[in-house]
Length: 402
Image (cartoon, rainbow, N blue to C red; front, top):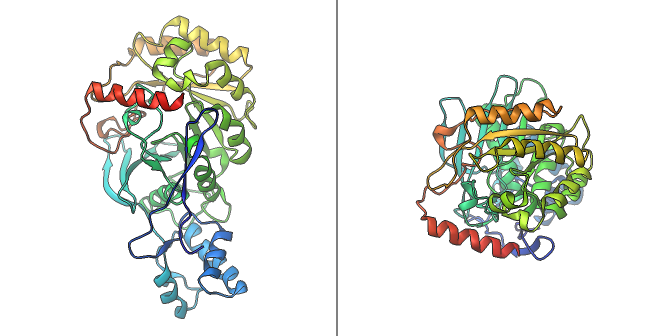
């Protein structure tokens, strides 16, 4: 294990996402980044580098603690590792972080980071502070393979999956910025994680699973699975596996209750329809009244916001006996988008109908709009794209979905 493993890029295929290997780009200095590696991978890496098996096991345990519990990036700070070993480690390995290209702070306290990988790819993450929690919105891909028409990220081409190290590295960078090392369960500002940044997490399943395992490890970052939510646009074949192998809370980007409208604004609906999606939600392992499935519903004027839409949403949730809540999201505009946000009165009316049926339907307050950090706005390249090019990219992605 002398070099990073190939990056597996699942893309939409005829039935399931099809793994397409892409070789990982090695660091220019030849060193191996330890971020994202499990205990067993650390031990194997050290053994391959020449350490005896017992010493490799001990050093792996020590490195794990310093990396994931203490947040250390400097081998010389690892006081229980002999000083004579520090140069040996520094010559071969690095404890990295994503490169910060730009860090912005909104007037409401929301923070957004534009990050860059070793191979020059840009992606974003957002931290949203509230009175009772602090939520980090984490990206899983550079770009996105889907083309949800109201989503700014959806206008991007998919470049590649983020590795497990790049995913967990976002959490570690946020911990750095917030001064939250060493890991401790109490008094944290960063209390929750949502896999709702750039990309479709279930089209990067293995790396998302492996990264979240590191985040949830009690001896490492130690964040409870009950404080982590994975969002999907509806990759039905991967949902049960996500429940079994990852086991975090599920959020589904529903956004419409009829085939016609959802086909338009969430085109993966043409592949996995509403009925198939909601059946998969009903079968999601671990879902119950204490761990409800969240349906994300962006409010688009005269598109999906009528009283009839609200009543149909209630009917569907009841029909499939779903332990659910609905997050109503005022649409966050971006240049070139053809949709408008529903009025405040219309959103409130929609919410009232769902609430009166006994289903929680709070209205999410937009955060970070002034720095393009709000829901659906993440997009790392500040490029101007014509409507014709947006339509061409959407058609290209839809063809890939089949």
